[in-house]
Image: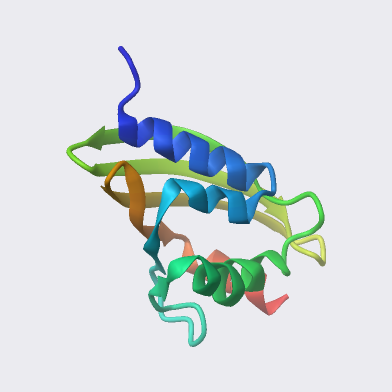
Length: 134
């Protein structure tokens, strides 16, 4: 079975992120992409809009709490169809203080013109908040 367009775009997007090319990942996204991690964190519990907002006000603020080895991502399942993808994956990392950070995620991605236009992230927010507090 061949991979859907949604799966191919997601793979290219996540491969760029996993290689450390955060800005390069956005060539697979619309200019107005939104990213919304669930949760009520006062700074990160909101919808981020566009590459600059996502990178500067969300991802870089999170990655500063991860050690220099980054996050190893393992995709466990991906289901796609009709402009949407559901991706279940694990992220394994260590915080800057050595705290193990092994979280499970589900991304709900929506597509427009064969590019990602929105990502909603579901994760263990308790573990996530502990990472941010270290």
